[in-house]
Image 1 (cartoon, protein in one colour):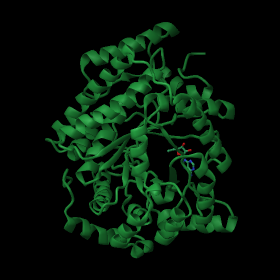
Image 2: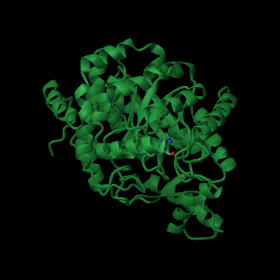
Image 3: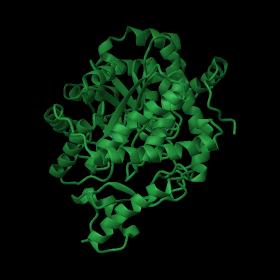
Image 4: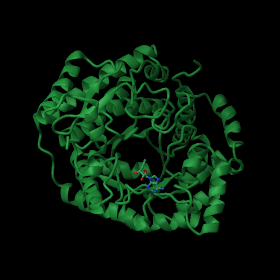
Length: 481
Ligand SMILES: CC[C@H]1O[C@@H](n2cnc3c(N)ncnc32)[C@H](O)[C@@H]1O
């Protein structure tokens, strides 16, 4: 395996950059020095890292939507419409661009022009190119982040960072396992070492770009320790390439205690592992994604899910919350629905922000449980990689040590099976080959047995199926009819 956990040399980076910039014509117009100049000229009010640092200092939870449409003018209108209702802006990239199918994205742009409406599910930044992406940044007042799902995000990063986007979501694991079927993990991790090195090069020139691994992964009953391990590994890989501003994320699961414990343990474990690796000079923040699983079609019920996710984001102390919309069950939201999701979120953030969730032994217990799980799995990752976290991650997925429930990637074992316990916390129904301590497994089994007893049925896979549909059926736990 040629993959290695080390900072890319400038020679290797430059050689690879020449190849990357030739993969689509719009790569030709991108000059790194010009990108640095443009980034340095941005006002602080447009810098994602500054907004996050301020929120961390103030203990505030910022809100951010997802949003992206095919044509530049419409994308600008959409973001300008949403801007007054949020703290941070996105540009969600379309599915063709995420697969580097720029020719299909070009067709989508042409069809959208002809139709007079967006026929892509996001903003095709590579096709639009540097000048048009700068037009987006210049039309806005707030910081803009690139949100996508791209295993090979090298050209996308070159163009959007030179264009003044100041945050970049994703990672070689979190944008492969939940988003791709057959992309070798080694390849996507290598591609993201390039992306992180590019961010590190901007950092060396005084331009701080925020890096946010994609926390929720498959977004379906993912146990906190699983997404924490991936987030921490991607944080370590980014730090290694010189990134300094890291946001670790988590997708809401629905149980109060577990969700609060998840964000607290994520922040503490981030520091634990980053410092153990010798990093001190970095800025760490957290992001809480409102429920990422199936949503109710009924918009009033959808607003409840959004509100619940907002309250939990604030109570957990997350630096940022990613906001859903009442159109979640149907698809890409209208700008009005997107704004409604933000307004519902802001209402709850404002009503909850002065309240602190009381210190509680059950939360502390859940924090300790998650920490023990993460430490056990991460120890195995480092062992498998002989200390190399990139190699260890690849081998851990091959061995089923890292295993993301309901993820499409063929390199993911898919043996770990989660299920909710009697209070809706995500527990381990089948552990597969994940190396959790016996007493931890016994605890999960005990919690599941409480539910089985309450439902008068044996712990069966049907419980898992019931849980997957529960929230879209207006419940948290998939109780038998
Ligand atoms: C990660 C998946 C999430 O991203 C959302 N999403 C994907 N593309 C867009 C889009 N173009 N506009 C708004 N939301 C979007 C989708 O609804 C889901 O909540």
